[in-house]
Length: 226
Ligand SMILES: [Zn+2]
Image (cartoon, rainbow, N blue to C red):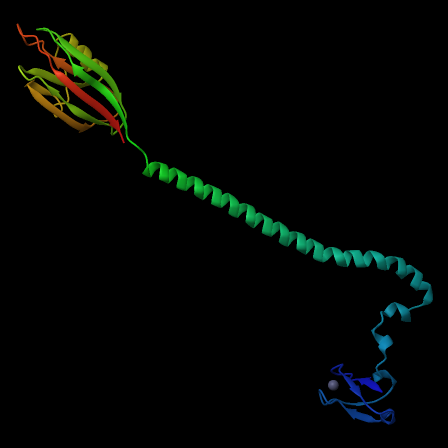
């Protein structure tokens, strides 16, 4: 005969003679009388509807099937949430990897960025007495102007002028401003290597001061954006 301890609910096997007598639970040491209430029946595990009035059974029976789908749905919802979370994490991860690779692409582009070189002036030019020649160029912030002007037999004025207004003043023979660190008066060889701020510039080979001699300067001038 199997009985159930009323305190700890553990099952104990006792001889049938114990019925109506006291028993000590070997698990929790609870002392109780072995009667019908403690006898363990396997049918006790069946749901309570069986003990209810028979008229209620048909009522509950149809309500049972909906209960089990609801119970099944709960893990489904949890599973869906978990799956959605996993998919979201994967999608975010993939986006992060793509963005990172794009950033790496940008940075490697910067690292391998080759400076662009634009030729401002190149060649040998004959400039008559009292005349000048010029090149106009636009410059981005920090561009480097690099090169030289050479007039082996004679000399020449080299002016670097910023802005149209100053160039107009130069053309009219008025006072004009030039970049003194890059310009040179009566030079036979002048090298240029400087960084410029953004703007419009004129490089002028000026033979206006000469009364008789034409000049044949060679100029090599580049604008480097790095
Ligand atoms: Zn017990």
